[in-house]
Length: 160
Ligand code: ADP
Image (cartoon, rainbow, N blue to C red; front, side):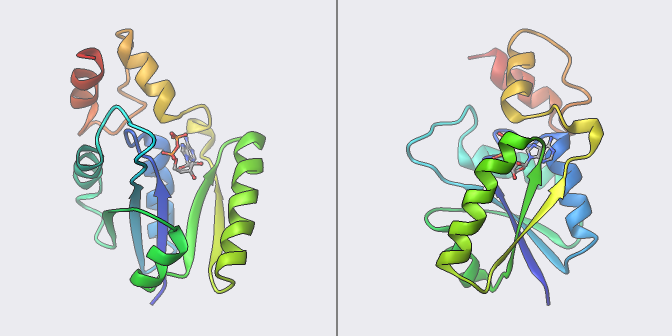
């Protein structure tokens, strides 16, 4: 069984993330969306909130689940018996950072492969932080985040 992990901050999940999740779910037997717990970086949404938003969005995708994890990705993957890391690529700047991480993960565990998926052109400009900026100043985020979570994202961000 091929198990892939899609790690990230997901603060919050966007249409760009969801596009990568759906395309990955069509390739791998199981996809685990894994929210990274980073004690040094407080997001706008806490980890439980991010997981809950993702749960709502992947509800109808049978072979996708969401979890959070702390520590080294390769250790977490071993616990889950997962052999593939999925990463989305939007730009050359994404590439430089991801390239370094993929090689480090390879060094830590040569049995794990990082698979890069090119962004959907429709979402190439989209990031969680740009969504939050738009929401903070009252812009429309309807096509930027899944419809199930749009109003909660606006409530949360505009209250800050
Ligand atoms: P961000 O805060 O930049 O959205 P995340 O850490 O939440 O970043 O992203 C998790 C993963 O999803 C990364 O591999 C990132 O490159 C990818 N990703 C984020 N947004 C998009 C997008 N619009 N299209 C494709 N991949 C994306």
